[in-house]
Image 1 (cartoon, rainbow, N blue to C red):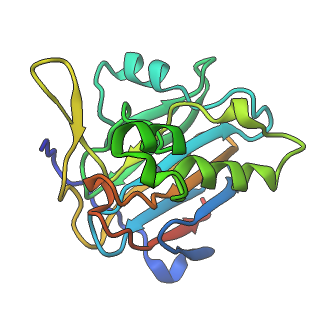
Image 2: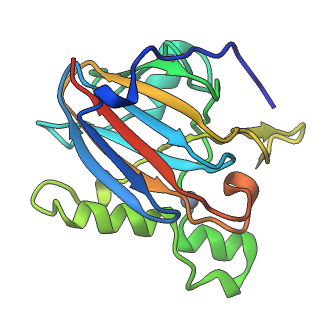
Length: 216
Ligand SMILES: [Zn+2]
């Protein structure tokens, strides 16, 4: 497990203009205006959360794991990371982070990958890809399947093994850990609070997250 220095926020909950609990296995899709700040809290700890973002006014220009990794020359994201799109547009900057490290390679759980990795009995289990599809279907005039690209896994880490493979680690995030994003441009946020029970990214028992937004 990799840890960096924690960066705490000075923002107060009572000043937030928006708050919402995302139950285990549910999703959230919501715009952020330039200058607004979004905090995501891992309420119970050890709860992976799949995260994507888009240029609000041009959804085809989505978060790019590759561009973000190349730009900062590291695989994990944490305080100071700027999440950029395929064209290099800056969408979000991480301005506070008490988990200190989130991963960019594991992708979202899906029915297909579940059945390959964990067996045919997982066929009917809900996945992050299901949640993503349900949320974008509420904005079907602007978003479709091809907009579901490799995502960030917040509050999750993977360990690279000597043979080049990797596996998810358990016990990364503590109860109350949070990460805070400042919108550098108008951005659409898409979240799946991971329902995964077959690997430790959600501690085998998914739990809720909290969302807060502050105006600039
Ligand atoms: Zn998932």
